[in-house]
Structure formats: C-alpha cells, structure tokens
Amino acid sequence: MELRNASAAPVGRIPLLYMRVFVFLLMLAALIFNLITFQQRVDRERRLLKQQLRYAQQELGRARDELKDQLRGPQPDRLRSFWEADLEGSNLDGMTLASNSNAFQRASFRKCNLEGTTLEGGGASFQSARFDGAKLVRARLNGGAASFQGASFVGADLTAATLSGEGGSFQVATFEEAILIGAKLSGNFQSVNISGAKFEAADLSAIDRDHLASCYFKDPPTYDARTKFPPGFDPDGHSWRRVE
Image (cartoon, rainbow, N blue to C red; front, side):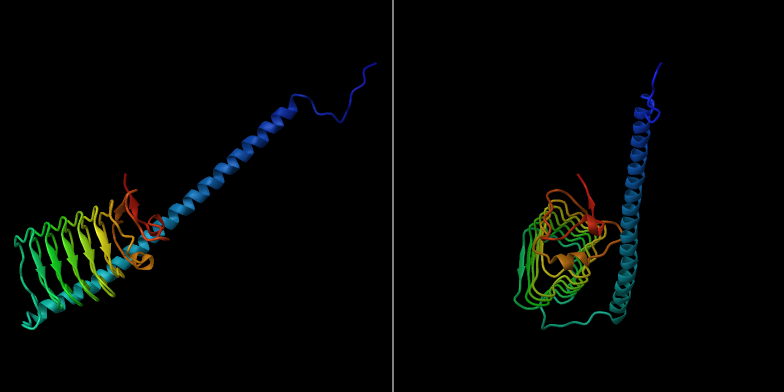
C-alpha cells in the first residue's frame, strides 16, 4: 500500500513558481525604471522649455533697449574716457588701455583683434560696450563695481581670457554663442544670456552659484570635466550640456 502526502506540491511545480515570480519582479523593476527615466526626461524638457521662454522674454527686452539707443543717436560726453568710442574692426593686438574712471561705456569693439590685450576701467566701465565677433584670446578685461552691465560678447572668442568685475558687474550681459574655453570669470552674473556658450575648461568658481543659476539660454551652454563651478552648483540640474 502506497501513502502520499496530499499537501505536498509536485516537485516540478516549485521551481516553475519561483521562475514566474522572478520574471514578474523583473518586469515590475523594468516598468518602474522606465517610469523614472520618463519622468526625468519630462523634467529636463520642462526645465529647458522654461529656459527658452525666459530667453525669449529677456531678449525681447534687450531688443527694445537697443532700439531706443539707436533712436536717441550718439550723445558725446568728453568727461568720460572712450565714451561711445567706435573702434570696430581695429587691431589692438597686445595693447593695454587703462583708465581709473568709468571708461569704455557704450564703446564698440565689434570684430576687433584684441588678442592678448588688456583693458582696464574703474567703476561702471564697459557698460553696454559691444565685443560682438571680437577676438579676445588671452585678453584681460578688468572693471570696478557695476562694470560690464549690459555688455555684449555675442560670438566672441574669449579662449583663455580673464574677465573680472566687482559688485553688480556683468548683470544682463550676453555671451550668446561665445567661446569661453579655458576662460576665467568673476563678478555678478545675474540674468546673463549664456545661450550656446562654450565653457569647457573654464573657471567659474568665483561666480555665486545663485547668480550662475539665474543665467538663461535658448541652446544649452556646454561644459566638460575640467570646468570649475562654484560649490553647490549642479550644471545638469540647470540643463547645461556636458561634452567629452
């Protein structure tokens, strides 16, 4: 007479049950991972869209201000050094231009060769100055309090350049599409346009992290492993793009 345990499961069924549970947990983990990845991608796209909207708003205001400047025409001021000076296209390679006053306000250095040049001014110097398309490789630009406010460096080559200002400097300036590889920057960078700027190997550690976070762009600025940021600033969290 053969006795069997009625409560015992068939030997072959237990491994099959474990396999089904394992497959279910694996599918569940994959689903959770995909959901997290999808949410992260949505968050990145949302942050980028907010940046692009802010870019459009800020640049609209900048365009209005530039139109007002054009309509008012030149206003000579002999009490200020290089006030509204038009140096566009000049070759100032290796020269030094310095003043203790609020010099170079509204000056135009568009498409100038300023490689290795030193430009120094006092408080409020370089306000609304234009360096669009200029070559500023290894140049040194130094200003006092409130210097470089509203200055424009669109498309400028600032490779290995040094730009420094004191309190209130560089506010609402623009570095759109500028090359700042290996550059060293210091000052107040609140609401600066850094759309498409290249910051590989740049030293940004002297900039307040909140000021850097307030910068805006349409196309993400780029950085690499050599870029130095202020403590606590997360470039990825602010939609910057890392390049190798």
